[in-house]
Image (tube, rainbow, N blue to C red; front, side, top):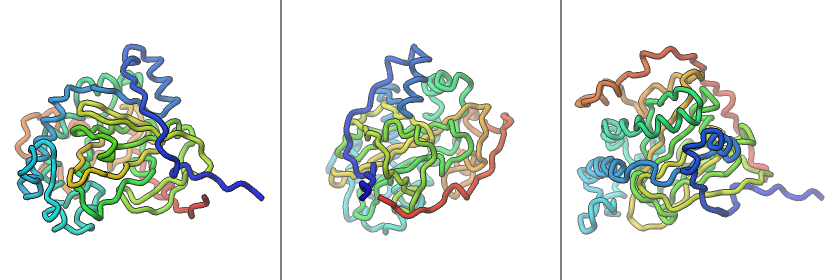
Length: 316
């Protein structure tokens, strides 16, 4: 009788993320760790105040909608349950961003939210990682996860299925404020990049696809995140979110993406995240260098391949 395969998705989080900050001055060591682990984590990579300024602007949008509890300090992001639950599950989960479409539109209009992706320290780090000029995807994603009773955690997945283009595209996941483990931050499956592209099955939560992790033997890692930290990972690295166990507190984070400028790209990565147009999102911006900057580049476009988003039954 054969031994049942272990489902790696059910394994508990085993250890803390390893801080790669000491490797910033050693490009070879940085690339070697990135290749082996499939991720790089940097504690305090950006100034805390820079990130908290973006948090303040997002919370102001949430506050104008009446969702924040005035009995708590504004920057804590504590919500009023009765206000949060006036929205349906469909309204908060329409694009995996945690808030209704009209609120997300206001977040996408924030110049500061998009400008953070172009921070000089981020550009310099990815230049070191790639060994060439990095390209910043303009399709920045905000996660404004309201503590709604029907909010779903993001299942285990690989970003490549959704992004495509270049395999060597890296996501920069950034907490917009402190995210302790109890608030449900991101966890990565260390080394899972080495497994290549995995099969998937349908699942609730952002993206709608869950990687099949049967028979793998990798280790889940996470940490207590602080504003200014970044976690970046390869498009084949498996990752997921964890449940929010802090009553009434929302969780703010963002996904920025980077790739070597010379690598192929899928056209949707140059579009806004959501049913919006760049002209309307740019209204009122002061920095013209952040607008349509990709139009001066010549890309090798790689069409989206729907055939790789196959469905399989779980076999664990």
